[in-house]
Length: 372
Image 1 (cartoon, rainbow, N blue to C red):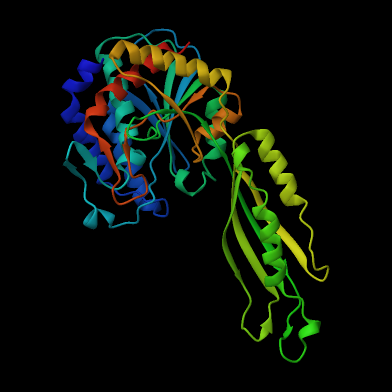
Image 2 (tube, rainbow, N blue to C red):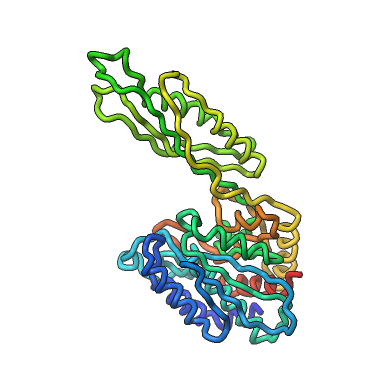
């Protein structure tokens, strides 16, 4: 498989170029539709594609007569890059890399999976389960509309292969991801003139700063729990005791148990100044992806395939989330970080290593065919 992938490297690069040059920021429905249309059209008779809302499901036609169950490959077509980014950050091939907006996160991963299925077809490798690729349109903005579809498809699946980029320039696979909480705390106080009626006021800003001290103390680095009050706002003028103030908080936890415990702490916040009231909104929006027995079984299979193709497969844990968090939390064996190898996701130096395209395609092909 790896030699086949190397022989088709120029085709793979051309395909990635086409996908990157079709800009598809999360906030542009028309651009996302163009991207999904381009991707579906590129498959032709290789797969049966259908839209589910703004998302795309493609079932591949692969060798093997009887199909039992399915394997789900999971990716997204949206990027963090605004329309017009290609003018200042064009797709290019230089220094042994491919560069461009969304090339690493994660359009190359989608292209690589297509070529993995083509390798299976050309080698007539029997695949005894359905192979479905789901491309979400809102992963970068929280997967609010795609989560239900992701969980539904995962529950039909023996395993989930997530096409997000690997970790670092080694391309380590991801066997654990932290869960993500998104909270807003709003404080309502009592407005008053700070010079005339100071004692009649109850400052929402002062109350919020006291609450932020409590919230920041929820961080437990030894347990891998981080809580970041990332933004604050409030008040109107310096001579008015602030009636309202709020903070937007990011929380990360490595386990479902820790997520539940942290959520309980947030729900238990009480005002220090009893004249103020607290309004908490939000919660855990991505459950943790834990390193389960099912995840490890997939990793061991990947390691075996890696040895066969001459590549060392390593694993990693990360604080970032993906749609694989949802599938792993359902107990479906999930292996993440199977996409491109590179660096700079969401940054101006976003790029991938060309010489790692072939082994990743071969790994994806082997996993797709050999998952039991």
